[in-house]
Image (tube, rainbow, N blue to C red; front, side, top):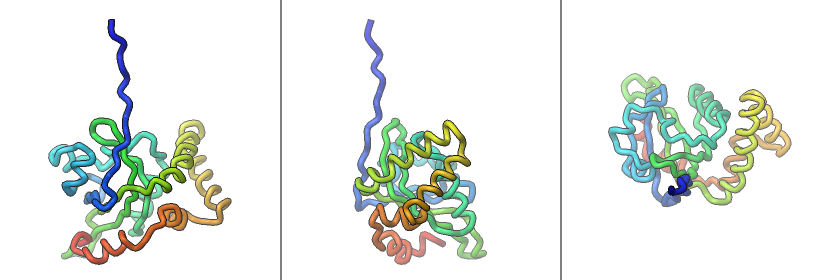
Length: 188
């Protein structure tokens, strides 16, 4: 009798210069992905389009990060996030993602969201991973409200806020902002 081997996931490291781009409708269902997104995630076009973007959500991610993301997007505010995502075959990859609300060219009304993602800097992952682990632990034992309180207390103790913390640990330059400004066609 053979012992069963449990498959362990491995980290995929995206090319830091290649963006992974997705567009969704207002409910977060995928409308478009670029080629590199499909390559990294291992999904085919027909497995992605029409599906919830959460198809790539890794279980190690605390819910509070997505709650914050959705709140900001619904308020028509951009947000930067460091995310651990899951591939089709169960592997994972860390990314820094800028989320933006998109608008119809004709009506100017919100019509979805766009995410432009790059490989997360390793120093940012080392910084944020323990925080995410703690938030996830709190969510599982005490609930999401306790997790929110912990996160707010964390920012207060470090004399910062979410946006400044993310910009600081990613050493964010204007590359992502420049990409959005130069390629406004994506936002229409």
